Image 1 (cartoon, rainbow, N blue to C red):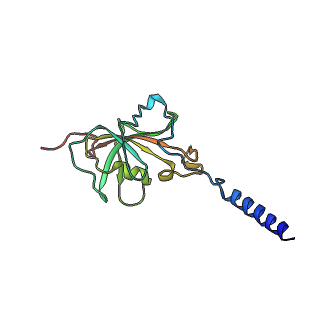
Image 2: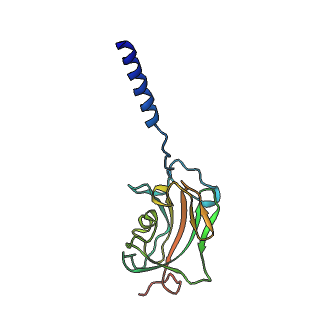
Image 3: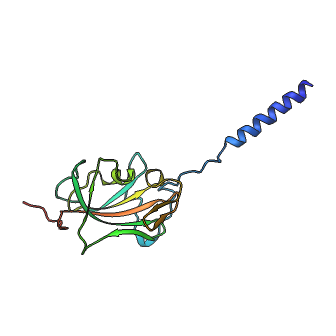
Length: 167
């Protein structure tokens, strides 16, 4: 009888342990993502952050540094890793205004903007853990699939859209 109880206990332990293993969804990472060639992602030439966001300066700005709590003006394009654009704000429209440091932006976007200056252009790669998460997310008419790595091309400008800096 003791052997049967020990065997039953062992089987229950193995079964319980198996249930705990890997049934939870796993977040995608930037490093494991295949990007559409048209996006021009250069992971080796990008800077990784401790949080998992990658960024690459296309043009280093020479104007004012982005400061948390102040209005920042930008143009941008947003893509899924497969190259499909899901959002964009480009000239001739006026630039969009954001305010970093308020918690109103994606965490990964805030991290990727740190250190930018007016006139700067940067590509930011955001893992889903710092973007829209594991579940599908609707932004207006756009459905962002769960567990999506996002690619943002950002240009920081003056309120009028120019990148010139005053002497």
